[in-house]
Image 1 (cartoon, rainbow, N blue to C red):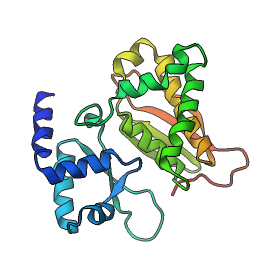
Image 2 (spheres, rainbow, N blue to C red):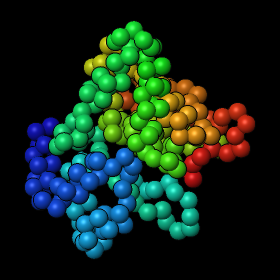
Image 3 (cartoon, rainbow, N blue to C red):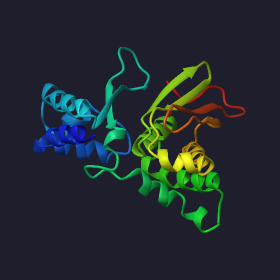
Image 4 (cartoon, rainbow, N blue to C red):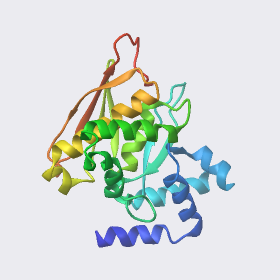
Length: 225
């Protein structure tokens, strides 16, 4: 862990690279190279070099965009789970505590509180945002390191990392149900034609929990590319 922090500190020692990291950390949705070129005024190769350093230091994750269109999907970047809670990114337990305020006050179950929070944070992603991409981004912001798998009309968001290992091991019904509700609330508020059918939970030290999504009744096709 100490070695990783030192590597991250070295990567962020360059002022431009730090600004790129902060820009991505503050963005609700993943950021593409084109957006960084426009924001910082450097050419594509210079931006790619900075991004490679940040990915190597596990400060960012690199993935292919799920957007439709011809040709190879563009790369996009978001904050890595290993960076959540450090370097100015919000801490996962801070976000969990805010999510569970209604539960602590006795006003809602964990799933209801999560759904309420999901409807609230959905506004951060703006009108027209892709609902599934927004859910993935929010889970990444909370430290889960999500990835998507699709089988026909069914979609699974696999949470490769559990940022709440201690809490989830002690109170799995609270932590897991709250985040299931979070996804439900976001999909509902963003008008998705997908809904959560289940959250298949695994021991937090193992991670890999699966958020299973299916088309809503009457929907013709899921909102994924």
